[in-house]
Length: 117
Image (cartoon, rainbow, N blue to C red):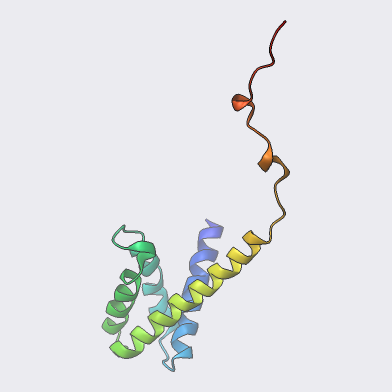
């Protein structure tokens, strides 16, 4: 439960920061009401990685809160770019990980049995 609260807390703060970055002040409470819905709707298998779906939902919901559609779209695209940048950092760590010494070993069930004499 605590991890879930931390996860959604960072989503709320990140979306609030994205709106501030594009020059719009959306109350934190309103961001909190919408922030959790966007990642949940991107789980629907309608597009690859929710591409386009997340941005559409983002714009639709924030326009309902009074944000201009152009500004909401700019914030949605910026949010996607921030997510990609964060994912890229994880990819760099994954690529830089040490090689697993067990990788070149054959699994035991694929090893030929020793011939008996």
